[in-house]
Every structure is written in structure tokens, then in C-alpha cells.
Length: 108
Image (cartoon, rainbow, N blue to C red; front, side, top):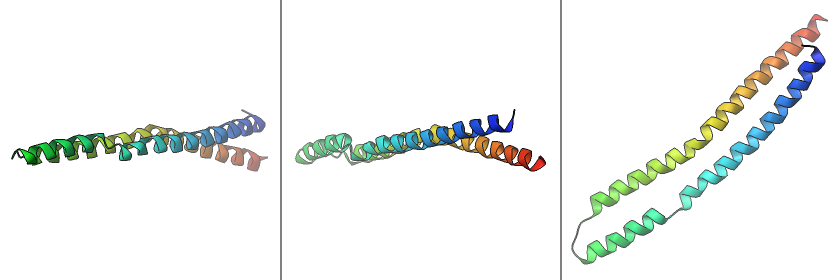
């Protein structure tokens, strides 16, 4: 591959890195929405109030729900990992190509 071809590929990798950075921000913005979803909390608060009014203890179940909601949030936040992995791969390929171009130019 010629130096000019390598530089074109390097530009393409730069574009891909930029696109992946945008994707990562988009995924992070979307996954943060789980933090503001009150559906589970609305449900267990409603059930807790009914339980309390009727002398029923649901504290163990509510605790379990809170644990599962925390696990769900963590798992949703991990959706960004494949995008970050891809970006690291592109950055590595970019750096290697940049070094190869530098070596070729130095050899001239």
C-alpha cells in the first residue's frame, strides 16, 4: 500500500473514530433514561402502602426489587461496552497505520 493510500485509510479511520464517539454519546444518553424510570418504585410504593394498611410485611420483596432494579440499571449501562471496544479497535488500527506511515516516510 502506498503512503497516499495509507493516508486515505487513516482519514477514513479518523472519520470512523468520530462516528463511534458520537454513537457512544448517543448510547450513554439513552441508557441514562433508566435512572429516571420510576415504574418499579411506583409499583412497590403503592404495594407497600397497601401492605402497611393491612398489617402485611413486604419489606423483603421490596428489598429484592430494589436489588434487581440496580442490577438492571448496571446491565443497561453496559450496553455501551461493545461500542467502546470497537472504538478502541479503530484507535489501535489508526495508531498502527500512523506509525507505519511515519516509518515509510522516514525510510524515504
